[in-house]
Length: 101
Image 1 (cartoon, rainbow, N blue to C red):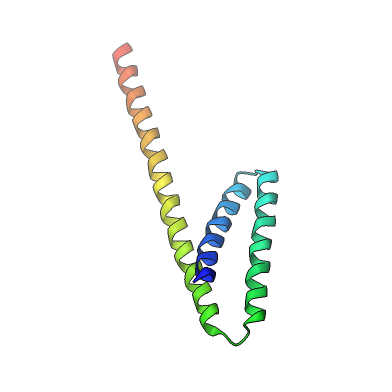
Image 2 (image 1 turned 135 degrees about the vertical axis):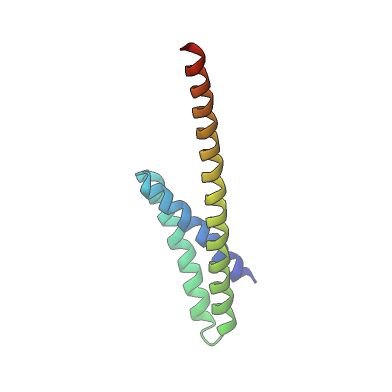
């Protein structure tokens, strides 16, 4: 079960890493890369120590899938919230422009 949670967490880490790279946040993306490598080291060590345990591999894979879906959901919610704020600001600005004309 712990490896499942690690998979979920790793996908959030990777999603955040992608965001920092796109935003050219150099230092933060470097720090996140270190965290991701440490996670991968733990996962790899766990797999090697339990090489015949396919349950671990499937648990990790399912955790990664769930983490990807959750991080996508959170990202979409965040984008929708930002879009709503922009739309409200533009609507307000439009009303103020009309009032001054």
